Amino acid sequence: MSQDRNALCCLILQEHFGELISKVAQVLLKKGPCILKYILVESGLQLKQVKKLLCLLIQHNIVTFDFNKKGLTEYTIHCDVIQWRIRFPRYIYCAKTLYGDAAELLVEELLHKGRCLMSETIIAITDKLNEALDASGHPGITAGLVKEKFESLAKTHFIQRCRSCLDKEVTDEAAAGQPPDEEELYIIPKMDIDGEASRKRKLSTEGEGTPAKRSRTESKESAEVPKDDGVYWRVNFARFHQHIRDQTLVASTASKIDTKAGEVLRTFLRLSETKFSSGSTTSSAISVNEVFHALPKELFLTRHVLEMYMTMLCDDMNGMFNKVDEMSGGLYAVNFYKGLQEIAKAHLESVVQERFGSKCLRIFRVLLMKQHSKQKQIEDYAMISAKEAKELLYNMFSENFITLTEVSKTPDHAPSRTFYLFNVDIPQVTRIVQQRCYKAVKNAMIRRETEVAEHRRLLDKKERVDAILATLTDKEQREEIEQTISPPEQEQILKIKRIVRMLDQCETQLYHVVFYIVVG
Image 1: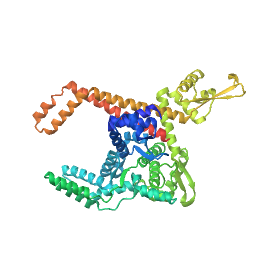
Image 2: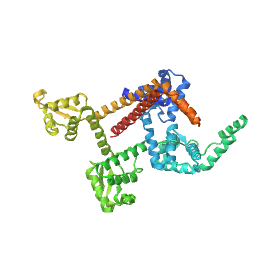
Image 3: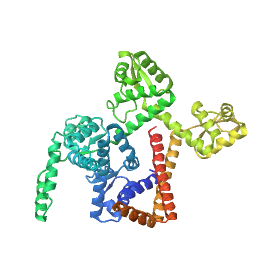
Image 4: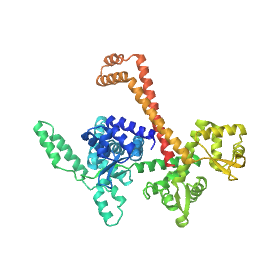
């Protein structure tokens, strides 16, 4: 694992959880799976602190633990889960666009807490929504409506039960020689959520008053355990990545063919989205009949036109969409690997163009298309002079964006009797771009922290003024408080906010590139 990636993970954890937790993470990132004693020695922290920090990391699904050969508990950190925290706004936005505001708040709550009980999450979100509705004068909603959104997220696998809840069942099935059922991760516990919500509110109301009354209420709360106690839920990141991948493939198809072709592919992917595992490279086979009946009515596509679009997708999408059988009017499947590979190549081509120029991009595309080629062939295909082609080739070769293979006609490898073939090693170029993206994200985070730290006094002053203005209603008083920040300070604040916003967007876009390059 690269130093830039480790440093980026430590920065993300430090930003979200503080400096102490980044020390524990640094040990695990550097040494791999470790026992508690080793973490304690390397981090220099106290035993109580290390235990609390490890519990917090486990709570947020960043660290997992297992027994080694000696029977000792080893802790393992997962870099991907740390880096996915950059994409949290994207996950929340996906939930909002698919299922509405309640689903948005549910996903946000699960991301914020790592793992939660279903009853606690639904009651908390119901209270939040009712507070917002009361302020706007709209009627409140019941916990049952929020539970429906929770069930929708679980049914489509966007959230899942934590596997630790199924340890007993997994152990029993493993002993019987049977694999655990994946569907158990999405079973909703049966309980009266409206009754649970009213009980919680009654207990919270009884707790108001004297300290003795509050203590009695707390003991009553501790005695009454929720029916779903021990069944914790978390966000299924793989399912969100699958949805983002599908949306990208649909957008790519719409731009290459037309919007109706994109809608046909969207319908196809929606029909097959829960019928295969998130790590599968191909989708399950879907018939034309199923796609035809599931198409939106506003597209006005006949069966014949739909078959024409299916044929067009097979011909024009570089092997991403394939016909696998003739039964039921034709069975089709999507090859995700080939589709994402084309998207990854498009990102790499964009990097080459920005770094080396348009002529180098022509050479790069020639090598992608023709594979191993001699310099003379590249000159002819790219229509570039010999002198210029030689300079451009060796510029990219020095940056490891292209590779050189020597094929000698004689055993002595004499230069005059050796062919020099240029080629693009996609995995190597991907690793180079990936590491540079990690470094760029790290630098953007450091720059953002530096900008905020340098102008901390001015930003704190702005926050205090905003807090005072929020409590004032008199216009003259508000104007007087606003004048405490001078025009030059206002300009400086706007400049800082603009820089911070640009750096935030930079982080998100860079990790967006990393996501598609790594997956592709």
